[in-house]
Length: 387
Ligand code: 0PR
Image 1 (cartoon, rainbow, N blue to C red):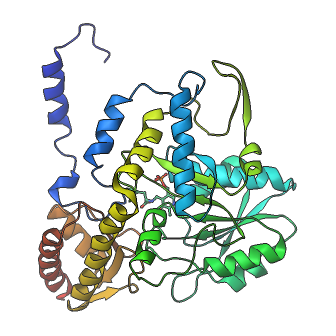
Image 2: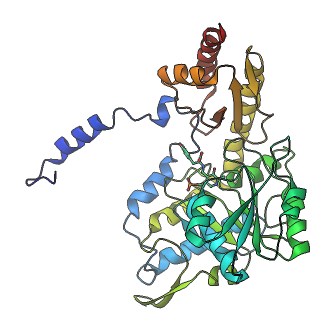
Image 3: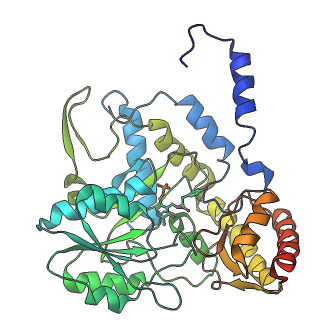
């Protein structure tokens, strides 16, 4: 019920704390299956100071608009471009929708089709439904990357573009983006890379010596990339990123907002009023951590995932789905449902809905949490496997 009388701040806060006590928090070390993390304290500071900025009316906040542009260019730079065109948006979902929208508008075919791996995130289902684009799902190979030959077989005159994933949601696998890029160039199609998760991992992992193929604008067929600062970028939710190689991709989705403070403004994002503080936090975090700062975060996460995968192999009845590529390790067990239930009862924030349990080595996940998890897993599997 909408209260008639107001309540003291302290009392409201107490009630809210009580109501959210059942939430799992990142500092508990119990959240192992999330792609989010506790944001960096400096990013939280930025959000608090600039909470009122609205990039939906950039004529009011012209400084913030320029900062967003700089943030986009720094991300483009990380992804192998001198200059990119895009926005800090609400997340990977909006970023993917914008890419599909751009490809559809530019293709101008009556029955648009998008070819994407079976491993693609469900945000593409929303995109397809909203934009009237038929999704054509390409098969995966045994290593869980997309079968590029199957992608080629599925190209028709209605194809508006191809999608590759750099860091799949379930397994953190990176598709053969160089081959997809060549295919896209051969057929004159744009390639979108969903690096919502991998964008803030792969460039640093490569610099650390991990062998991961190119996935970004260094490949000429790649026309857009999703890269989410609110995943491994340590920026608070909401902060997704969409970067296009050329301005025309952004222009193809721009709508005229004729009456705003800046005069006639073209707006490409799905949201109108949108948090400028998020864009400023992206800019600030990149400046603060720099390439080396992110590289150090990724180094720890990658080392932890290799160690964890090794420990999992020692547990009878536990099977790795595949060797980790990024900082995601997924495994199955006999009697998986019972194991999941028992682990959840012990307080672990995990899910086995895909037929395996996914552990994401986010910055809040430490070795001691994983050691405790392994102890519980050993215990639970022994009991659950017994007839
Ligand atoms: N693309 C990929 C490859 C993703 O993994 C995700 C989200 C998206 C796009 C969509 O991003 P937004 O959720 O920012 O719109 N993947 C995570 C997942 O489905 C989202 C998530 C994050 C789920 C934290 C749970 C959680 O606790 O697993």
